[in-house]
Each structure stands twice: as structure tokens, then as C-alpha cells.
Image (cartoon, rainbow, N blue to C red; front, side, top):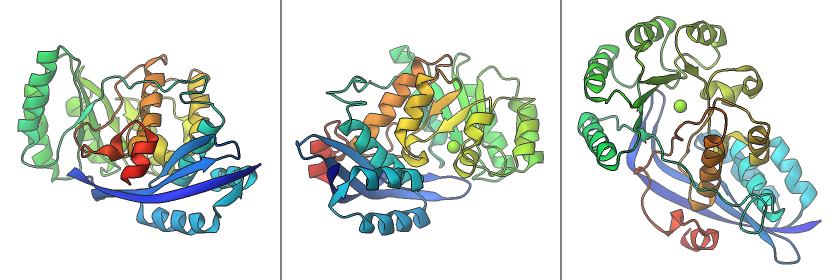
Length: 322
Ligand SMILES: [Mg+2]
């Protein structure tokens, strides 16, 4: 089947820089795509890797796809990857096929309340106070995510004590080390925090490839995999505890739709800072997650992206704004 693929590049600055044990993310960029058929039906997608090498690979692959293309060519690209490219093209094809969307069977669903992400700077404790105040005022459950292994161990241990002093007993805490700890440090944190009822999970505490270490830790505290799943996607079928999934980076969204249809548990949905086009999918997955056997708050990092038409839930508006 002959199809038309149009693309447009976009970029935006995050309102706050995101510091992890490995990177500093200030800006997001990529391409929006629109795939249409001869009858004028269309689907939208977003290709926006975070890794600079993946960015180059996507650019090179996109240059090989002519505006006038075919279903076969695009399906082949979703199989070859990389993940962000498979996501963008898979999104557009799924929407074109009415697997999801306003004309489809799976209407776009709205996201449940998100977890909040603490900033890694001096404003951390003040920001936490604001989040706590807001959740009490609105009578909402508070889930807080904190990226650690950024400052020295002792500094973060002290901060943790302060966070625990402030955090209400019915709230939830996710600690994301982004693969930045060794086994010894991870054990220290587990010893200190492992039995606290507010701890939801430790996210990727150890190096991506240290699966043995991660299995050992998971006997003492809930351990969520994140980066390991990117490097070894077969872990999605093997890891029985939490999996933090970034739909817009991991690949064809039709595969994740299928996992939810199969009733899979312990998936948590996380943003990679999408435009409005990608966000429709992230919100939809977050809503499906809420109906799964293990509902939990998605990680949408509210307040980190600017407010503009680029984040509209109408794809035409996003396209115009890019
Ligand atoms: Mg993570």
C-alpha cells in the first residue's frame, strides 16, 4: 500500500534541567511525522531520542525514507529500530489503522494523577514542601520520585533523612539511581529505607548489566528495572518485579498495547518529555496501566515542560507549532 510520510523537526527547552548520575538533559528535540494514505486518512508520530548517537542514527534512517513510501517499508523500519524511531512510525501506523484514536476502537484515554519529580538543586526541600501542601489541599495521593547518585553519598543520605521527616505516611517514594550505585551503596540505602512503608521502589540501583546484583537486591526491597530493559529487552519477559517503561524510547507502541491487553502486571509508565503528539500515547498507556492488576502513578514529570501549542492534544496544532 502506498503511503505518504511527512516530517518536521522540533525542539524545546525543559523548564528545569534534569540531572542524573550520567547526564544533564536541558533540551529535547526530534521529528514529528505524519503518515497518510491515498484516501486522506492519517496518523501521527514523534521520534525524539535522548541519546545523541541514536539521534544521528534516526536522522540517517529518516533521510532514506522518501515522502512517497509504502506500508512495507515503514513496517520494516519499526522492526529495525532504534526504539524511538520504531515508536514514532508505529504510532502513526497504529493511528492510521484505527487501533487507537478518535475514529478507532481504543479511544484516547486520560492519564491518572502523576508522580512528581524532585529537582536536584537547592530548591529540592522547598519544592517538596509545595508538593506536600498541594496534595493535602487537594486531598490527592502524593508519589515522589527522586533521582539520586548525583551528589556525594553522605549528602544524599542527609537529604533522605529530611525528605522522610517531611513526607506524609500515606505517600510514596521512588528512588532512581540511574545505574549510579555499586552493590555496597545500594545495600546501605536498602538497609536504611528498605522497610519504610512509603518506599515504592528503588529504580535501576545498579549498573545496567549487573543483573545478578539486581536479583540479589530484589530479595530485600522492591527493585524496578529501567535502563537494563533498554539494553536487554528480553528482560521485559523475565523480570517479575517493577519495570519502568518509557514508551517513546522503547519501540513500537503496538507491542506495549499488546502487553496491557495480555494483562501484564508491574509495568510503570514514564515520560521522556514528549510533545503533544507523543503525550497522547503516554497518557493512554498510563490509563491502561491504571486498569492493570498493579495500578500505580505514572511518572509524567509535571511542570518540567513549557506550556505551549507544542504540547496540545490536537496533533494538527502540535504540527503547526513545530
Ligand atoms: Mg529511571
